[in-house]
Amino acid sequence: MFLTFNDALCEILVENEFQDGLSKGDFQLRDSFRKQADEIYTKVTLRKRETSFFTLYRRFFSKLGYTERVKGILEEFSGGDGFPEECYFARTFREDEEGAQLSEDGVRLGFQIRAETLRDPEQCAYLLRHELTHILDILDPAFDYDTSRPLSEVSPSEESLFRDRYRTLWDLSIDGRLERKGFLPQDLKDRRASEFRSLFLNLGVEAAEQVFAALWNDRRPSSGELRQMVTGAVSLCAVLNIAAEIFGEGEFQPTFGPGSSCPLCQFPTHEWAEPTEELSRAVNEEYPAWEPTQGICSQCANRYLFTAAFSTNSPGITRKIIE
Ligand SMILES: [Zn+2]
Ligand SMILES: [Zn+2]
Image (cartoon, rainbow, N blue to C red):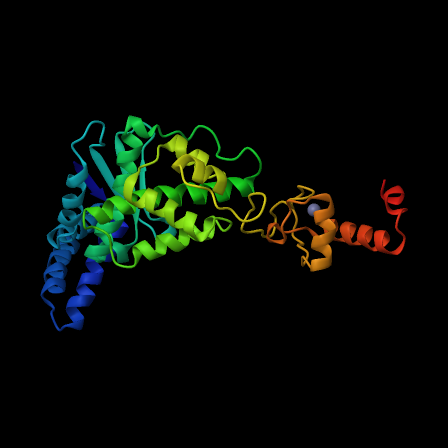
């Protein structure tokens, strides 16, 4: 396995170690670095100086055990058929950007990681094992990974919901496997459980527990099964063979925000109406499956309220006016 770390990552981790040492009154590491840095100033030409500094940082980075920390975990996963031979680590500042990705041709593996994660042996080990399990699934022909088609054929907002669900359901199966190997940090199971609940709000408590247990303990779904499961609580239960216990008639989107589409007129909107009881009743006359949690844009709301007002005050003529 050929490992590389980007310069920014090496530099910040080495600098952090200096700080740690200094705060404990230990100057040894920093002084030894300074001595070698001074040599670069006197002996290396200006043009080559930057490269020499980064080589120095890289040497200290390795000496401090970071390369070994990462290598040890990569070795648990590598060796199998098609596992990439090269791995590159780059620095990111955002937790939601941390993760691994295979290059298009599958020969290289790229990691984005925060300096804080790499500094913490336990957190680093979890991130790497979690991400590498994703990679092993992707490399497994039985998983049948397919990114050529979108998950939703309806709208970008549905696509984004389905993606969140895809990621979370897959994560349940991955973290369940890590737990069985004794590699799961505390509290993570609860965090995954609430993540999952928030993405399938219309699933009954008991069914939700069964789904969670099935993915956590028994079963690694294939990519095709995940694609089916993300479409809603009904298919989720069907794929896992669990008696569906679903609230509300249809599947609903748990969130509606600025710019997402109104479920009634399908137009993107930034103005959502407050679904009062009166309004809900009016909408349900035309769309019995609609629920207030799905949201309604203010234009639709006005139209329904207008219709409702007419039908109460002068029964019989509403239809004529609206049509
Ligand atoms: Zn994941
Ligand atoms: Zn609307």
